[in-house]
Image 1 (cartoon, rainbow, N blue to C red):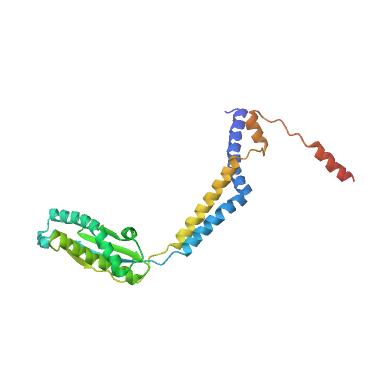
Image 2: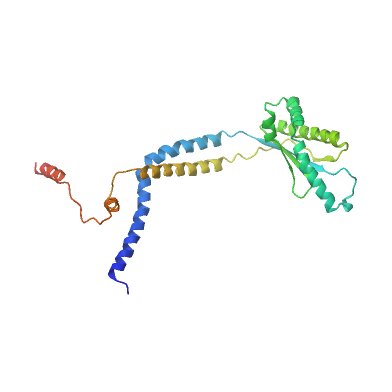
Length: 247
């Protein structure tokens, strides 16, 4: 059977935990103006970014890479497939070379730089296949498809010039995309709301951490390391109130 002091000590620590949780809530309520001041511009910036996202279309072209030797589907071995996959990885870098992309920029008079076009064009081998997928994103659907097809043509000519044989075939040429990429406005607004609240709450806790004034008796007990016996009222204030009541 536990002693009375044990019950008191457990209750005391439970109350302390509840008070600490309430302190966090009261801190947020007390600093609501600061939270609003920080969160409002962040959220507004996120909404503005979501509403002003441009319309972007993505065109895709699929090409097949082979080693250049004649083979039939029945005689294709894993070694041949492995060689072709390595060629696909190598050719992916050739397709984004300076010569090919500069020719495309000049032909379509693109308002972009070579470095930016290299970042916008994506050429990646499809996993466990001999296929290369070439993609390009642009606000003009027709231009996106034309650029992809031109890069593919320039790429095949370059490989034919270097390798002296044609081992790349177009499986699916790029078509003019009918639908733009999703703008994900709802997701951006939701992330902005969460981020703005987090930043506002963080600012409130930082300000509260550096707040040096005492608000309650528990703060005094923590500083002095002893229990408080009682509260001393403000006699001057009591006399003033009493004088007013007497009048």
